[in-house]
Image (cartoon, rainbow, N blue to C red; front, side, top):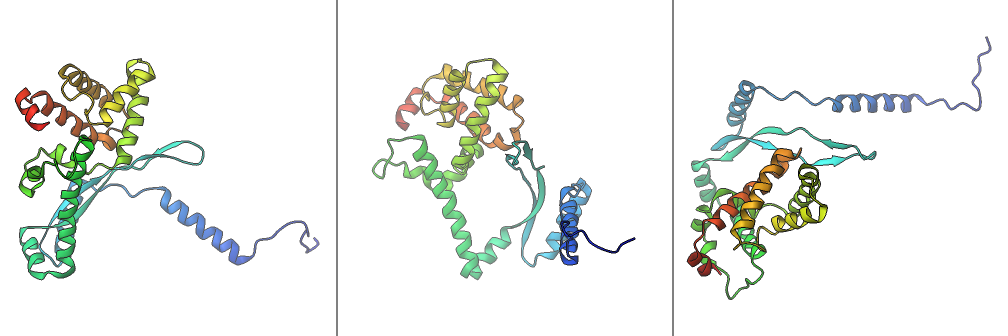
Length: 252
């Protein structure tokens, strides 16, 4: 047999072949996610993290959810939720930060500033008439923020992009779930995204929209992504529906 290579056929060099093999190996390794730990394994991981961190912390498992995305072929894909033990400073840890000062204290003050700023943004987003002269500053103290219902307190931290995605998903889901026209569902979605600003005194509309949210959260495949939005809206609607006319007038 003749020992020759066809001049029209490309033969990969050894380095290229090795690189391709390594690439395939990496792709295969990342295609199968590591199985989530059992509750017992997670508890053991929490204990290990706490022992490893040389600081006064409480290790709290936090669930991280991910958005649904589309690949280059337009196929929807959603990464599975992850539960990661996160070391949080405990009470003694906070005291240690205050005593240490420096970058640790600066980071803590940044976190405090973020909470206050997000709460102020939530008030401003809900009421376009607010400015520096009529802002409810008494509702912006640390004590006032801490005593807000948790969904209302966290609502200011929901990014605009999340509200935009919620509106889009609500329309798509509710058109199919209720059989209503896109225009009608879109009007409801706009009011929800606006956090009831357009109907805060209309008890009938508020009650109707809360019922619609119940249908939505049961029908959507992205309930975990928008649970914060729905919880915030349900809590706010409940607060508005249980506000007396005198209280509402005082708040205006």
